[in-house]
Length: 477
Ligand code: NAP
Ligand code: MG
Image 1 (cartoon, rainbow, N blue to C red):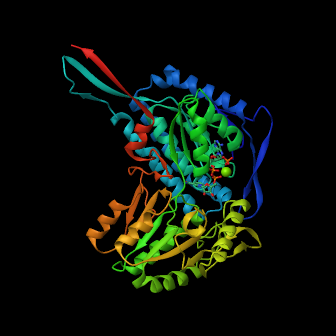
Image 2: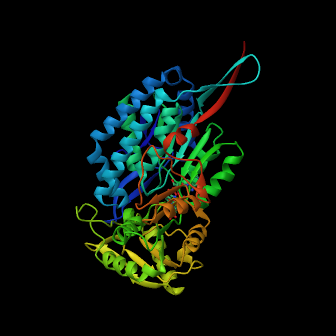
Image 3: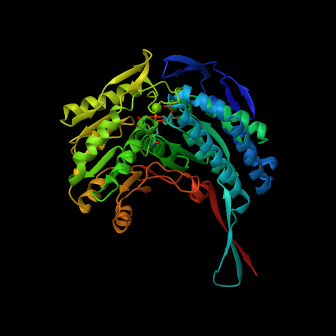
């Protein structure tokens, strides 16, 4: 483990000497004591990133050589997959098989953007008059990446891989609950041969280190994933320095089952859509909308399956539901369950806290039927293993219900009618729509939100463009 700050390819504690504990949520044991970065540390990290950004060592590196460094980092991460996955599970509480998927996805993300480096060119444009006019995509500068605890390494990779590929330098602020895998990336990038200051990691709290990064005049862009409330705060704090922003915020994603769907597949998709990652997934299919003709049947099958999905030791190969990330998050999820009961939804599975071997912040896989659109559990992001089931009578009502949300991150559609599948996919105001599947991601497919789910995109060519400025150059011929 690495528990100090990684700045300029060197490890050091905070000047203040302060540290904070990282807890294993499945055992309630202290896993590590990590250096607590603050505004002074952020100054140092931004200086290192700025100096590197302006250095010949980084700016003078050819795109192909930059790509080679990222390919090397991907190989080094792949070689350390078991160690990284184990650490991710210990700090986050997710089952080990999920952490392995997270680490291998990060390897893929690095390789995808490594491949872009020497293929991301500019273009010439046909202007009036006797000119050669061409467009350059130049790196935006120093990027502050602020990430949450649900996919600690994977979401960090969605930021640092395209930022570095574009030629930016990075200061990464991981979530307080889960800084350990992000810190280990320091060793990997240093070993890959990245120059000092290209990639820096400052563990610390949002209100101090995070806020200092957002306000820092030496940072050109903030790329953030987390709650809508903190995203709004970041927009305000970024205004003074006119920072560029990518914000990937909350969701309350609808997963819609039509009566013409393959119901067995749809029920599996509904289950995976909400319970993968303990429901701590920004795109979780947390509102299940079901045609009334098949609703009883769907709810009965779902309740049966949910009752067998028991919280378990994240290191047990059979476990499909791990520990909630923290006691605070567990309490927040249980509060939403209490509100669901109080507002009159009917609990058909789960609903209680749990422990494994007498310890841990677990919550049972929970399903509420009879949910009305105005209920709290239909409107607010719970970020836990809690599903709200609502009924509808036709396609028009399904689309209206799906769009009746401040959020617009993702959606699922289950139907055998190809025309309907496309119609509904187009009518839903969300950045991703999955048809007859759920929770699919690929580095090539942009991911991000409509409405209060944010703006800008992670992944794909779109993310790479988001780490560049566009410059037009006019040459009089
Ligand atoms: P969060 O509070 O939004 O935090 C996300 C990141 O922002 C963390 O690194 C956090 O640091 C940092 N941060 C907090 N306040 C900041 C500020 N004023 N300036 C700059 N950075 C700041 O999210 P969370 O604590 O991880 O989870 C809280 C809720 O957010 C969840 O219950 C869920 O509803 C939502 N969430 C959404 C997503 C998503 O992908 N859409 C992901 C995770 C969480 P600290 O860790 O020190 O607070
Ligand atoms: Mg927080």
